Image (cartoon, rainbow, N blue to C red; front, side, top):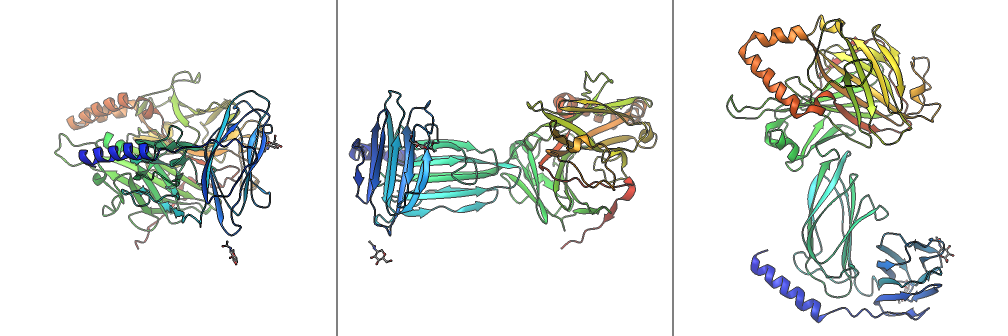
Length: 590
Ligand SMILES: *[C@@H]1O[C@H](CO)[C@@H](O)[C@H](O)[C@H]1NC(C)=O
Ligand SMILES: *[C@@H]1O[C@H](CO)[C@@H](O)[C@H](O)[C@H]1NC(C)=O
């Protein structure tokens, strides 16, 4: 809007609010009957109150009752003090307790009864509601169900005045493991300190029963973020003072604020926060999948829809019927040699089981895995430690060791709940960060496969183990670890965490709260790396860059937690014998 436009709209606002100042008449008469087609009602309520008001509407019409402000005794018990709304047949439509969210809307045919009861505490209380007959006033029903990554929502007729009696509900769904960010660029609706008359309500979930996050009105801008990938937006306008409404954009943001991965039936959805990619020195146009003609579907947020069949996706099928689909998002920034960034790689894998899916995502730059992904409720980390005392984690990457060194690892769940325990179900090593090369099992389904592997006693929130990397480092310059960690409730006797080794014969698997994958960056031999560094000038430069990075991403380097999937009580299916049993199937491009 131009400055002149702003001025005019402000003047209009002042004029309209002066001209049509809503005279809210307080109605205190206990048990009144309202017969008008629409009416705002403010009730003054005292202690020991028990009154029922009747909204008398033709039985054919839908009566809409909108509560937008009430102030009861906040310390009263709901069984003593509440507002109960009944329909024509005296069935309860809803109960508003002293601490209920302040917005409630009921649609019901015919008469509606509103009963207000209070306890004996001396205190002023007010209740505001308005009602109208949907047919009698030609109410405007609007709103939509929206799915996607981004878009715009505005009120009816925006940027012109919205009609009176507008009532809109928008239900938004963004990809799994993302949240919704709403940015209101313009709100210009009736001003009221309590937002009683016209209001925008934002709910953190799929419908209006979800927690109420915000109620907005007046002239302002605002931003609201949800916790899950669902959001409900409600707009209600009453009989008068309709102004210009609102406009908002919505975008999907990864729940970790960096990146997220969701596995669907035949594709996976990767969502990046554009700020995160920008912070790494890249833009969305620098990113492609294995098949470089497959680029991002959207710039804000940056979204890749990765098909299971096509775009270079590799399918691995194991003889235990677990299928893996993997693709890589490459970042190659332009520019000359001096300013060129290190190449980025995001490995994305969907593991599909009969009963479950697991999303695995991690990032590496030139084989240094340094990012820490967090998705979901629990933050689980896996880190190397100096010794069996487990008091100081290793923060450098790569982790340089001597040939006979024992490697100590701890998996921890960083949660307040002392009843959570971690169990190392499976860990395997690979010379490649993408685990494409033959993997070597250290432990699988709780069964120890490597004779240097040792489990230490686990405690509340952590599990510890050690092994010797000698076997790999003799043959390969680097070793990466990928572990499957299971989180259980310590009080659950039958949990997966108490079962230990599960063989093919024992298919009856205990319960678990979560499972997660963690990938840990490379272990290298000390002398190997030194001789490598001495090899050429260019390699020396690279070591310098790596050192810088390790100080930048000091926590991230040591630990890479990939993705956490909520899978309550899902049976585990890991019955593999030979680690070399992977088959690589080329995937047909369609
Ligand atoms: C209600 O509906 C009935 C039949 O559906 C109709 O005969 C009657 O006129 C309607 N009443 C009103 C007030 O619209
Ligand atoms: C609401 O208050 C009334 C009167 O005190 C009480 O009978 C009723 O049980 C209360 N409703 C609820 C859901 O507590």
